[in-house]
Figure: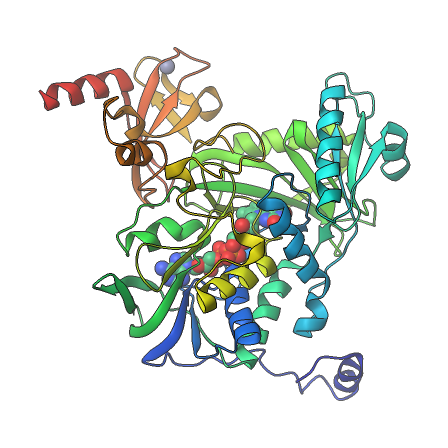
Amino acid sequence: MRFSAWQVLKEGLTGNRGWGAHWRDPEPKPAYDVIIIGGGGHGLATAYYLAKEHGITNVAVLEKGYIGGGNVGRNTTIVRANYGLPGNSEFYSHSLKLWEGLEADLNYNVMHSQRGIINLFHSDGARDAAARRGNAMINQGDDAVLLDREGVRAMLPFLDYDNIRFPVYGGLYHARGGTARHDAVAWGFARGADRRGVDLIQNCEVTGIDIEQGRVTGVQTTRGAIKAKKVAMVAAGRSGQVAAMAGMRLPIESHILQAFVTEGLKPCLDTVVTFGMGHFYISQSDKGGLVFGGDLDFYASYAARGNLPQAEHVMEAAMTLMPMIGKARVLRSWGGIMDMSPDGSPIIDTTHIDGLFLNCGWCYGGFKAVPGSGHVTAHLIATGRPHAAATKYRLDRFATGIGLMDEEGTGSQHNLH
Amino acid sequence: MRITCPYCGTRDLREFSYRGAASDLERPDAEAPPEEWHAYLHLRDNPAGVTRDLWYHEMGCASWLVVTRNTVTHEILACDLARDVALKAREAKR
Ligand SMILES: Cc1cc2nc3c(=O)[nH]c(=O)nc-3n(C[C@H](O)[C@H](O)[C@H](O)COP(=O)(O)OP(=O)(O)OC[C@H]3O[C@@H](n4cnc5c(N)ncnc54)[C@H](O)[C@@H]3O)c2cc1C
Ligand SMILES: [Zn+2]
């Protein structure tokens, strides 16, 4: 079924009895051309673009849980292209352009909303850094505007401008940034891939990767062995366990990141605001909840829930920046498992095993990357060569020290990002 | 999560800061091949389950600690002074 306003009207008038399942629930076949391990945003998008751009449709996505149950359905949905370093700049720019055509391409409402993002700064030095980042964004062909204090005040009158520790000096405004409905992104890619012939196999955990004479030949799963010519490991926070099945140790530590949402409120915040100095960011969902978060809990974890000290820290930052938030009640909080790399940038590469590909290291920023990552990973799988927008995401950069992408400038070492 | 420091007793998580996997204590020789240094600096077992990692009791006795804990349940299983762990490892090597 093609979704359209006409379809909504017709279904509305006929009791909504015509809406079917958005994708099939097939049994795994004995063999595929390509198997993708992990049915999160990146795995689904990879399958979609393999089918759409490269005509490779004999593909299975193996998901141990259900589609949308991983981080793709747990994030705070911010989409932006405001990176400063070569490697990241062109990749996120590529991804944002795909976002801008995504709903038409997928025929799916992912509620992509370019409501803009303001990154606040609180000192002269930070203003210089913001100006430099803005120039890098403009050089990349994206948009950035340096706002002074009054410029920010006109958009966000409710911030505490004269906070003693963090007075607001201004902000870097990225108008094409914004948010999207995370589940819908997973569902849209899932439906798009399924319609092109990809098998989405849920409740199917990969338990082993078969390798013969340096070449991948298939996988073992909880639903039996499946053969494949090529296998892509796209398991985000679980990348370490999956790669271990191929005898690999990765430069990845899995950490917990929490998020919070308040009760639904009337519209009060029409853009995304980041308060980097307080490790805090916030937006308002279309349902009205204020969605906000902060930094990692900063210890290795697979618990998918965090501890209270970080919750307290985030609430303190919220009160520091926008005291009015004290009147809102927090409805729920949750956590997701982040695949942290030493330099804070991702890995999309081949491996030393023929036919085995790796996509991981998304840290806390992999939602915005979903279309871009799927697009370039599909290119890598189909052609064996990296896409022009992702030439720098090499796995060996940590061993060689060449081409590290440390956006924060804190050092290429675990536990610094 | 509360950590029981051998010197200070059971203390709030806020008093500690995290460093990473306890393999940080197993520093290669200066002459070791680059692959060994790469593995030491970057590669991680990253287990889902029992792990050993290094914590610093920053707001307490300022000891480095090796904490054995479960990354899936956040249960803390043991806590030893990193100094003792490192000395024992050196003894075992001899
Ligand atoms: C609280 C929070 C806030 C965030 N906010 C943002 C944000 O605002 N903007 C942004 O850009 N990013 C954000 N992120 C990061 C983003 O969500 C992740 O980087 C991204 O979703 C990871 O890629 P994915 O969607 O493919 O992961 P996932 O959805 O986690 O997909 C991986 C899948 O692999 C499956 N899997 C694992 N092991 C196996 C196996 N052995 N066999 C089969 N399947 C397996 C898992 O079940 C899972 O479904 C946030 C993350 C969190 C947790
Ligand atoms: Zn102590």
